[in-house]
Each structure stands twice: as structure tokens, then as C-alpha cells.
Image 1: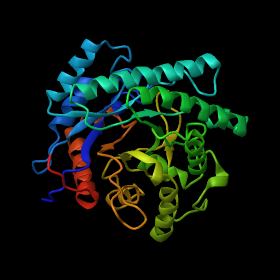
Image 2 (image 1 turned 90 degrees about the horizontal axis):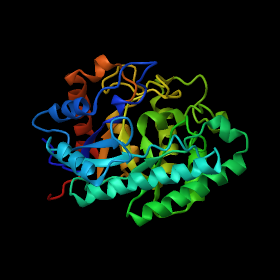
Image 3 (image 1 turned 90 degrees about the vertical axis):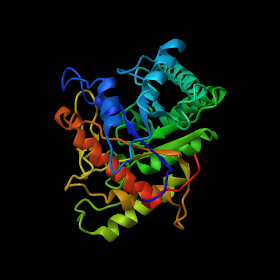
Image 4 (image 1 turned 120 degrees about the horizontal axis):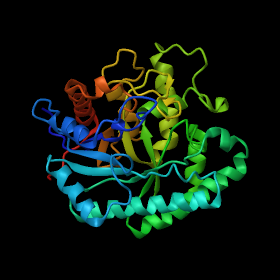
Length: 344
């Protein structure tokens, strides 16, 4: 067995929530997601932690006592806590002045929870994850003005986060205005210009950047791309990662079949596929290296943990223990190939 013990291996809890609900399938409870994660094991190796969504499963307004109970519950499963998703969708950046104030307040509340979890010793690494909570169509109405509005709001959020010692990671996903292409994502990060602002790369979402969904002019691969052309795919991945890797401070290992998908109330975005999906277009273990190593092949060590994200899977898949064992096995291979060892 490879001796690498970093980055730590985390599972996301929000796939139990995202794309679920009244017009889809029932939410899978937090405790169930936690137990499935804790029960996964491959050759004696288990998940090290979980990344959390501060909505549905958890109350953004939880008290410090409730934060302590959360910490105890997760650590009781021998798991740490990592990155937190801020519930900013009630305050779209491209909405009203009040919406933007709500956005920043949700970031503040998330940072408070993050800070407390860190103080409690259960959160050794992680960021606060955000997006613009606005559609590409809204952004298209005034790209210049809306880009400035996003950058201004993100700067305000960064300044609030800095008071808590937190970093913010903007998720690159084709359904978020100002982040819906690899070029607009870079432009947003450059415009924010804060030391505690970075990028969250999800392999399933960033693959869609190559196909120009929601922004055709930034397409890298041709419309009739032959997925058997691995050389061209590799060049495309290198182009996107070269642009966004320097900003990347949070990383989701994931698979995608080159299509978009949405369920429940979630907009169409890059489809997450199971770890061993035969239709997956990525060589997950190899392609994770484009994010985890620099252009010279050296490890960046830019994040202390990596997380599996698999949203909008059917509940029958999500509640099957083998699903999580397969995911863990893939994560272990990523660490074996692109990780490192430190004395804990």
C-alpha cells in the first residue's frame, strides 16, 4: 500500500440534498450520509473527513452549542470536517442591493461556523465555498456591469471572511453567471483581487468548460468532438488547468460523461457520474493530476484535503454502500499518484 497520507480524503454531504426535494426524490438525511461515509473502507483505508453544506442538513443559524454538537457527532465517526458550502442562493449577487447584503451575511455566518469548528479541533483544513447565485442569462444582460458587481460583492465577502481567518473559493460551474466559462471565471478571480479569494475546481464541472456550454465563444473542443481523441482532450484539460490551477484552493474529484443534467430545483450543469461509470470521459486518477501538479509535474500541495462530489445520483445509488467503497477506492488511487506523506 502506498504510504501517502496527504491530501486527506473527504466525502461531500450535500449530494444527499442537491437535486432532491418535492419535485425529485426525498432528501437523504445527514446521519445516513455520515454513516455511509464512515462505513466505507478499502484495504483498511477509510475516509478522513466530510465537507458540509450549511443548508437543509444543517442550520446556518446554529448556536455555538449546536456547532459543538455537530463537531462531536462527526468526530464520533472518526471523521474531520473540511470545506463548508455557504447558503448564498437567497441573495443573488445580480439581484438587489438587499440581495447582495444577504449574500455577504450568509458568508459571515458560514465563516463563524467554520472558525468555531476549527477552534474545536475538528477542522484542520478547508474553505468557504461560494458562487454568484445568479444565472449566465442574468450576467449576459450586462457583462461589464455585472462582472463589476460580482467582483465588488465578492470583495466585500472576502473582507468579512478575513476577519474570521477564512478563505473563500468560488465554484467554477456552468450554471453560475460570471463563472460559467473558464475565461469568465478567471476574469472574476482577477477582478476580486483578494489574497483570501480562490477557485474550487470540480472535475465534472470544469470538463464542461471545454465544451462551451452557456458561452460558446469560450469553447475549446469542437462541437463534433470525438471523445476517443485522448490527445486533444488532454490538451484541452491542460489549457483550462493552466488558467485556473494557480487560483485553485479546493478540489473535487469527480467523473462526467460530457453531458449536462439537472434535477429537483438545480439548474442543468455538468453531470456527475459514478466513479466507475463506463461512459465517463475522464481518466479520473490521471486527470486529477492536471489540478494537483503544476506545469512541470511538481505537486502544488495547494489544498490539504480533496473531496468527492457526486450530486444528483438516484437515492438507490446513494444508499448503496458499494457506491462509496468504489468512490473511496478511486480517491485512494488519486492520493497514491498525486499525494505525499507527512508525519501526522
